[in-house]
Image 1: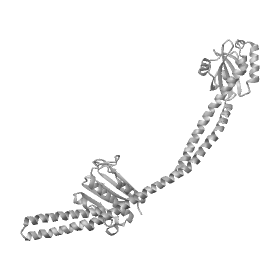
Image 2: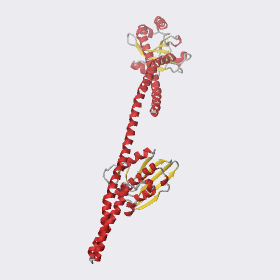
Image 3: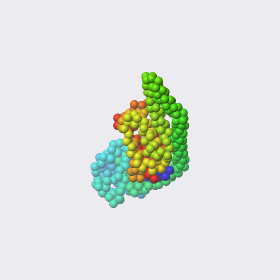
Image 4: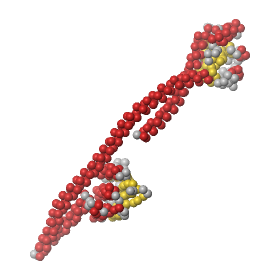
Length: 426
């Protein structure tokens, strides 16, 4: 939950700052558009009436009429300078008399504006010769558009507006927009907190339920193994052991009676039956091991490896200190050994297996390594087998999680498998 709140705050800051910057740029563009609209309004409703062919030809009366109009109705409304140009760059009129009649070279924006007739705006380059008289006015925004005389002669109408006033207009627009946007983000964040709190609680509850079910499955599995082991040990194993002894006695009687061929056959059957009984006893140890408290961790794990040894697999044990571990840790490590060795028997075709208990820093590691076929970790299925799943490993992960531990698997086709169980040292 705290991580979500921190992420939410970071996201709020990123979105807020980014949104504020975008809002400022949008407000600036809006302010420039306002300057364009102001120029269009002045041109259409005030200046256009005084734009005549006589003005273009330099008639003094036409110039005086335009000058009165500009000074009384145009200047002082955010506009600091006015110029009227012919298409060849001659200043027809300006509120700065020294510019009237002079000719200058248009820049690219002005040429494009007079060709297209579309209003445009740009930051004034005060270094140009025609801007000599504006250099003390500070940053200016020049807006230009085309006005035509009644005979159709085009003139470029240009106003110079204070950049600071445009910036103030942009700031005003920005200040009107940002509080509502930031407020909306805050409301959204506040509304999301209880929702995420509820989802987090539900996820936590689901995780706890899953761990409970895993532990229940592990416990149920242990209980069922105990029942099967008890049934085999007290029933079938005892009966088969009795039959093997009976066969051995029968073989002796047949030998005494001179029936050597029958005696040999019965003796072989008794020997084979005793081997099967030993195999069943090893299987009983795998299904349900002797109590760790009574036999000890090292002894119980050694009993688990008996089946592998009987199959000719070389087993290396290094389990010093295992009997000193807490019972819960011993139990989980034993289950890791049990599941690992079961997979070795079923799938790996290993010739060597090592089981090592190691203390590294503040952790205790139990590592099982085999040199078998391995499997593809991406597919998660032992090489050469069907999709049987790994419920045993899933149960072990849950059991280790209860001890704040982890289970990692390293394997690749043809390179064996390594299982590492890690728990914090007590």
